[in-house]
Length: 275
Image (cartoon, rainbow, N blue to C red):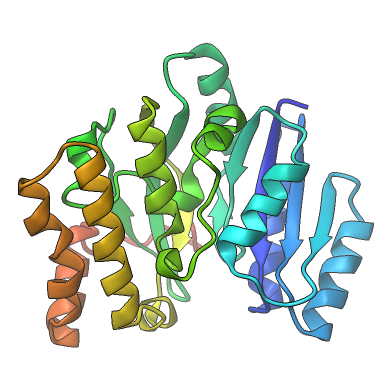
């Protein structure tokens, strides 16, 4: 077992979950397992996931009795994972062909890195509309402006994640558990790399944007401040830690315009969605 894909699902749309799982199981690379945690979904989704797991031996299904959140669920997946490499996948996103092989092979041949990600396509119901590019070799300072890795797109060495304490399951890290983990890994000497290909498709639609509440931005600012202090990025870090608070106060239209600019605006349509 070269890798374990870890995914948490809480209700959501069955079609999107099916697309996410299919994008994993259809990869040419086959030396992996998919550890999927049902985070206390309702009866309909629970039955759907049970049937999905029963139809494919690569899927190992875990179930929380009640909704416990992403950090708790991913930690359960990590605890059950058999592979030395953990590959993330969100339940409403898609892996592009060749993704699992590329991430796994990179970490197997580059022992100096504990993390690897890729650039990311952005899509919604209309198709692919943007591209997120990340630093090739993110350094601690790259955490100041923005998260230099897409959580759903990354792969990590299991031993490095466990050394950092896995995901912090706390109300203060809800919606920014990835940031907290990455900061802890960097504090312990881990470093990451970004492959230039867009190997992951991230669903960024209006619903996703509306889920970000202002209290989550406050919690993110506090996590950033603590991480910057530990990494020796103060006093400059004080200003950047306040960035989520300032962004949350922007008028919706201005925020959307900034997102379009940051995501390199809409890409030309090329046939079907995800092309």
